[in-house]
Image (cartoon, rainbow, N blue to C red; front, side, top):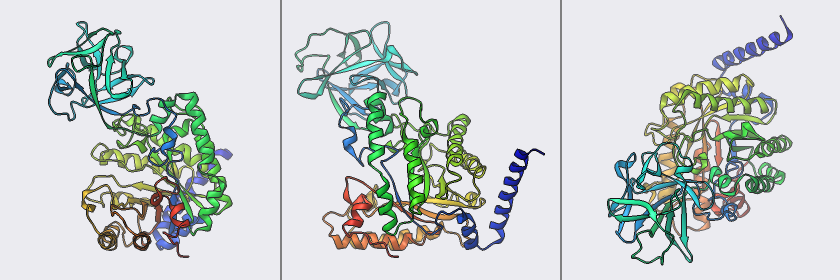
Length: 518
């Protein structure tokens, strides 16, 4: 037997013994076994380093200030209304047919997503996922499934009035709505931008994304590399880890994107450099005795339609193929391998906020099984975190599955936001909701045998109450600390820094809104 074979067999034997011991030991002892590498053990009180290695524009909007036409980034949703027909452009049948100008009201078929080529040229994606192009009769159609040069349209804005546009087709001519049933690319250059010009359209910008894809493709690789590397080296620094450790917290949850595994040369439009920042984070965590939860926040293909998944246009394509899942497992394998020997590696979170029904239960559990195995190939001590699917009414759907794995943790996110159910609630009603409803929900996913452990991976002391006092915020934050402190793995606040003060734990601690008891 070679020394390499002996090492492999020894490692597998150690894993078998670890799993066996977690079955026969009390859960508190199993936790200590898993924490033996040096990272703090549960209960964890952590803070998310959001907006650092995975861009979210609302956290630090100034990152996007230097992008020309930064209101027309990838995934921006536009509607176009013909000034002569007084009707909206529509992809007939939702796609696969002509573009018409006959809709009085705009909804899904009348909304088009931008794929940005440069600051003025775009592909326009329709509801059915096809792209605009021009046929041999100069008619504008939505039949292309893959964009190319024939699907590149230029949006020309009127000086001083960004809402009025003309659209230059790939043939060099402008679109015009001759009739409600005829939208063609055959109008010349001349225009006075008047209401009698069939080549003039009024735009509605109804949604936009400000994520990693948008910032990288918006700036282009050269400028994006400069902007993001400056951001990564200044937004989170060593002194932040010192602050975290001295404030009563014992861990950080760090969102990362799948492209980090290809650093320093990730696929376009992403840019390299975030891996060095993550290396720095581990070094600082080790210095200040903090645990690190590495969280795959953005998976290849995007596991949800939100900017924090680095989606290009809001499409959710993760898990649609075995190859896609395998690529994600490779990312987890890379992260586990790289940081397995760090005493601060507390946990690897396999995926953040997968959204049902696009992410099926079968595809998610297949991935979680393979991702768990990938982590265990490199470390027997790190916890493995599995996130609940969003929009599933049953919060217990993963309990039986996750409970089979030693060191598994179930991540749930609790916000008194993003739902009409919180509209109009008073201060006390919000606090009561946490102490009663959230407490009950957490108890529902917390098993008596402790498997899996439970983790409130995201929460914030912000709500929809207007004009609340500092004392109100203190009471709301304390209620959440009390309830989420019952999670058997712990909790993590979203996020350390944010231009919105109540979302910034640093600001909340420094200004006395949050007090972390010893």
